[in-house]
Image 1 (cartoon, rainbow, N blue to C red):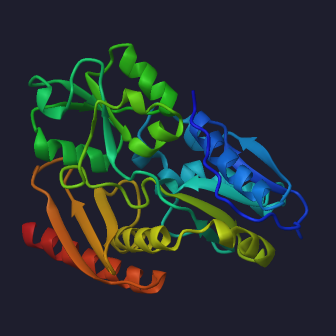
Image 2 (tube, helix red, strand yellow):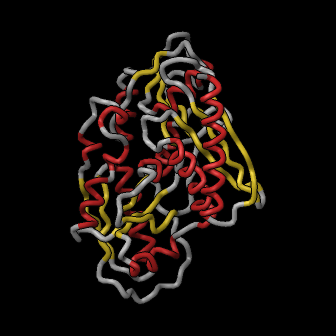
Image 3 (cartoon, rainbow, N blue to C red):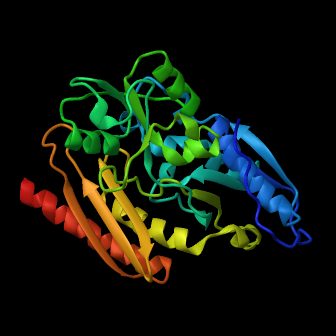
Length: 318
């Protein structure tokens, strides 16, 4: 059974807005995320309803995202709903949001991050090292492909598309010996018991924004920006700003086998990134740095610096 959102203790406010319409994909995880935001806004006195939509990314399941247009396929229809006034806000898994939003749109809020790590899910094998040689592992993430191959170049890594429930069903049908999923999604849907092992970030560095929810609005909606401000979590927003800056500077698409993860260590932001070649060398190019980052702008500068280190390492291998 899906876990219920834990609501903060807030004082209700009299809503200055008409009912807020949330555009959302109709997968179980996307609906959980939208319901979570709905409950938080309602706790502050706003009237809210959901507008469920099917995106092109949900419809194309026989090809990898990198070959059909990237993760932006999950957000385009939602942005159209914002543009034509059908909806007011869109709730996204931030790792699915392109690094550059179309003109006229903005991220108005990044909420407190869930577990950003990857999870190992398997009916038979406790972890990656327990797999026999040549075992089949499912993922359609190029980031996960290069990180898995760096640890186990003997594995057969096969494409895995579909929403979270579809991926678990394919595993249970025996199509894979194990699959790699985001821990956050499993936890949000009350499926943490499916996790056999949670990878540490040293071996499976997360994707930029993984585990965080972002709320998108039209840039001309200052009223919504103000209403969403209490839902924002500054440390999470600063950290993902650094990660997304790495991805943006590196080209910012899901065809890029790139990992980037930032976390605060005291007052310093520790940012690490990795790049690998999905078709060749299993060795990874890595970069990391830590420095004080008090806001999104300073975090983004750190991200650009790390991207430059990665690009230098990639050039040295060429």
